[in-house]
Length: 314
View 1: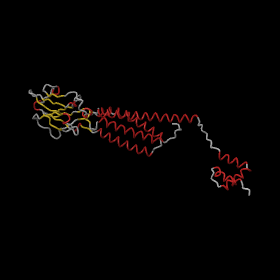
View 2: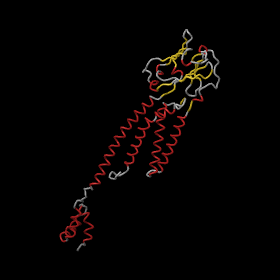
View 3: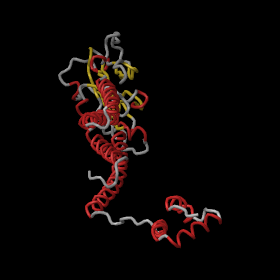
View 4: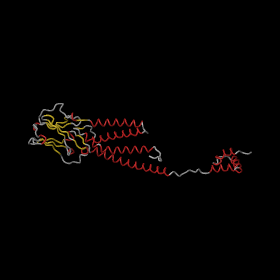
């Protein structure tokens, strides 16, 4: 019985893989001996598939550039992370922080001539104390230091003292009776008298005698506003991801987030400021802000390349 070529060609894929029975093999062999077309069909089946392994030159160039860019960005990100950590740690350690009476005052003594001498602890040295004469017979101090000096008191530069004498500069032209002077240390948290360092017998200040009107929490307000705005922009950027608007929103979230973190570093963990020293903190925050912002931008660039084909031009 003559078998048609169509039936044989249906069997040839199985035949080529040695998956047919002996009877089918005999039938196919008999047909192939007489049919040149089916023999050619079988030969084509057994021929290994050939692929064009040569890519266009411009495609290879894009691939190499993309790989090189990823490597550069990865190395740059690692460097920026280390730089950001170093700058942020140094900024925090060098931040000016206000001290409690226990952290600032060593002892208070009165000399034989009536002069009052305040001995400040070693880590206070080198930072100016804040002194105000608020009412007759009462004087107050608020001292600050670098956070580094407070955390690592072993680095001592010598003890600093304040001598309150009648002829000292702070009493020049004043009618204050230095021998009847109350000396206070003020709380940096609310500006109110924290501890009476020396009772000179003068009338004590009333409840309204404080530095409260000079203590501001603008740093805390700014950090809260920047954090909320950063979170809001991040949510909007996620919803608009993949678009030009989403990229700008993402940058805005990064900008305000980094600015919030930078101001936190310069505040040393204290969110209040006295006598308009917040401009100094904002200026100092530029140093940690720049490496943090560059780190975020580099991380975004790597993230954008993660899901894109290597061969695409960017």
